[in-house]
Length: 206
Ligand code: TZP
Ligand code: MG
Image 1 (tube, protein in one colour):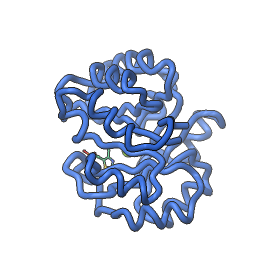
Image 2: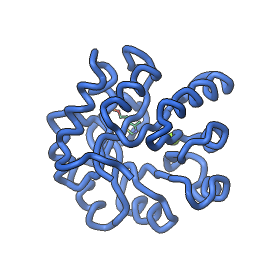
Image 3: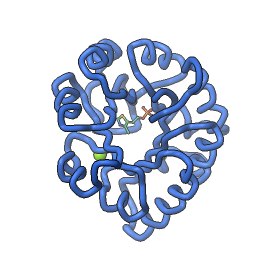
Image 4: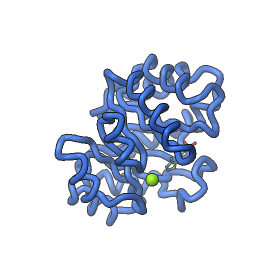
């Protein structure tokens, strides 16, 4: 599991989620997370279905919404600490779906791994304006400490740019997500490819 992890962000996107996800797939990402906090349920289902189709050959995860993930046949969900409980999600999704959990410290990381999470999102590594309630930055030192203490894959997120991503990867991130640095740019595919190149060998996730 190494490479760029794509998360949609319609509020910042220049071209919209469908265009961005098409670009991400063309750039060779192996996982896309649909993160959409606002909208009518029927609109979310319709968009998630389209994205699921675009991501039919790669992993497609849904942020927060276990119901939406089930409805569109997603490969799994990504849950924050205040979201749906891991155990309830696992019961609803079954043993084979992917469940990622956001963690902010070592204790949360150990708890999520012990519960059975498939990967951890460590966030925010640096300060970010993209998520208002992201909390205090962990820095790369805490990422490295989490890397020492857990064995499941780590996805680093929050304030990551092409300049600081090498330090994040060196600290032990298996994958990085950089929302603003990618979806605000005119060529989303080109930007993602730049991140993919930071990973030695064949970038792949899961
Ligand atoms: N979760 C933790 S930080 C964050 C999310 C979704 C936003 C990251 O956005 P950016 O623009 O890469 O800092
Ligand atoms: Mg959440």
